[in-house]
Length: 88
Image (cartoon, rainbow, N blue to C red; front, side, top):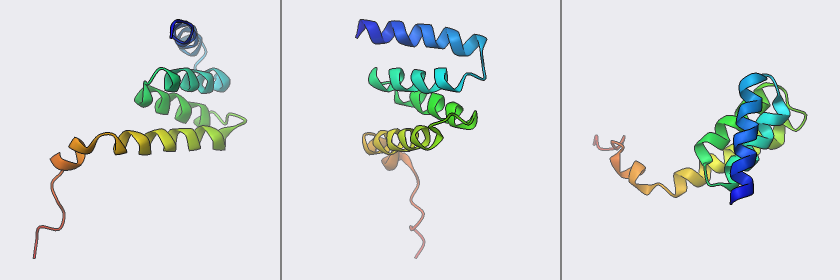
C-alpha cells in the first residue's frame, strides 16, 4: 500500500512537469494499476504508448486488459444501456 501511493504521487509530479516522459507515464500506469485505479492506469498507459514508449505494445495490451476487466466487473453499466435489438 503505502509505498505504491508514494510512487504514484512522485510519478504524478514527474509527468506534470515533463509531459513527454513516456517511461514515467508507463510506470505511473503500473503503480495506478496496482492500487486498483484502473481508469487512471489506462490513461497513463495510453499516454505512454502515444509518446512511443519503447514497450508501446505492452502498454497498449495492459490498457486493453484493464478496460476489459473494468467492463466485466461493472454489469450495472450493461443494464443501463438501451438495447439495440428491441425492434422486431
